[in-house]
Length: 315
Image (cartoon, rainbow, N blue to C red; front, side):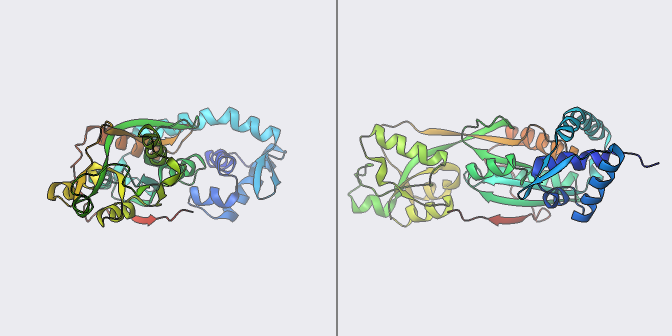
């Protein structure tokens, strides 16, 4: 007689979470046909439908929702037991990690090296993007976890504070020289990350405080590109100090002497509250602990940790 297994319940959980058989197959490192087979076995054993298709999404039936509600705590408990006894040196799989471009510092990549040393068979799929986009990808199950900046208000996400980075108004030395070293926000042009980023909200808010119209802000969708624009003398920007430390030290960039206090941007390690994968949970715990204790100039990425990196353009 056919018996239900943990993999059947796990399949049910991830189809519900991600909305399609294809996404669940990718998450569980199996084929779409394998996912379909598990669903057929589950429905045959229970003698009831647990999914119904609406458009492109697979939605739980009433009985399917009841099954997930009852079994989700069991899955979390089993995964917790596995996490406590597993030897992480033999952990396999791929962790899909998103890193906010503002948070992309050596200490962030250093923890990948640390985890890679202890879990040598673990693979990484690393995406560098804006914080708002990453938070949505984590909530949607496209990413397992992320290192993001700014405030978090999504109920479905769990965030652990890991530190902060300073932001300051800056312009290039050439920009200062062209204005006899007397530079203010009124000189412009002002550059910021686009809406709905927290960086854009901070920039426009500080412009309002200075009596300037926020409508005049130029948008650039990558922080590193914005740094290059400011470095080239094409305007003023509120830049993360840890990303331009060398430019400040050698005088390529200078801080504006304005009354506005420097702003500290909070950094968080983020995952879904209902995350049940023991490897993701362990990596998240390591990231939270490692990044909280690391100094800003901590370990650079070692050659042995070579994640696949995507830098995404955004509309």
